[in-house]
Length: 244
Image 1 (tube, one colour):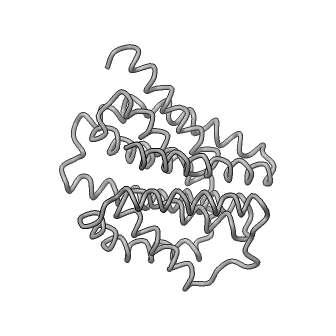
Image 2 (cartoon, helix red, strand yellow):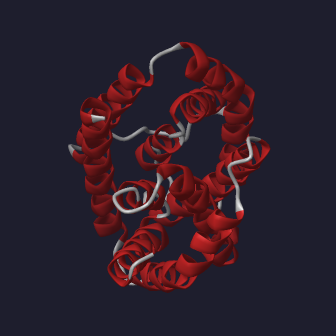
């Protein structure tokens, strides 16, 4: 990488790390969107999985006791069960309409929650598994399994810290599955490890700063940030789908 490319990549890594440390989600889209401007996507995407796993490993010990394990295990069950269906869609259906549909649903849901929509009780096993199935289908079809889980936790009545912690646990698992699948396809090369190694320190620095910022943030302020950021991500996903 040239010095300019290196500086840009480090800045993107730090920004994604900060967002991940603060909100518990969103780093992958920042890294993939930003780094793909200067590096090949086939190199960026596997490196992003590795960086996200490192970020999760940094955050998990800090939030372990706050994770809602009851909902998370049902969510992961549905995700793992439905991922093969998503892979089938990936092989047999165009990705653009799926990405557009995801972006519109996520944006609408974020706006509804901003205007006060909340579930009165945490969903039981059946709707939680159904949400996980949707995550699995989307993860297998377009590599974006997080939005249903994000909407699930931020519309439920659990505390903001619990929502964030549970998402950190969820993303850690699906990223581990994703990097294993990428390795099986021969996509995890030496260059991927080199790129991840170069960017791991700015990622962890941003991650730590984001986590400290979350600790000092009021829960409602954090929830507003998460919903705004989710809406922005949905717009980015829509533009990516439409413009290619």
